[in-house]
Length: 133
Image (cartoon, rainbow, N blue to C red; front, side, top):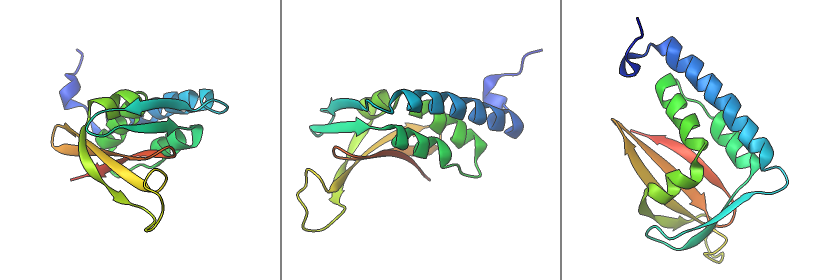
């Protein structure tokens, strides 16, 4: 008898997280010489570049919550869609005094059940996912 996907065990989430991580790493390899580039117009207009290193960082940063890790790795497979469908929350300077086009994070969030997933996109450079409670 197949178990309802809403009632997975910790072990099942752990295995799913590992499987999805491997898939994200394969996608990351395709970005080695040609990063993914797109423009976000969701609350802010900005250019985003996702590199191999960015996806590897997302897939490698795990928490004690295997369910979250599985969701995070699934979202990393479609990081562009995640950001485009997320709510723009605002921005802040990363390095005071630098030009905003090269030195700030724009914050995007999406609600997934009880957890809030936030994507931080540093204009023209980095993208990562973070777990917020």
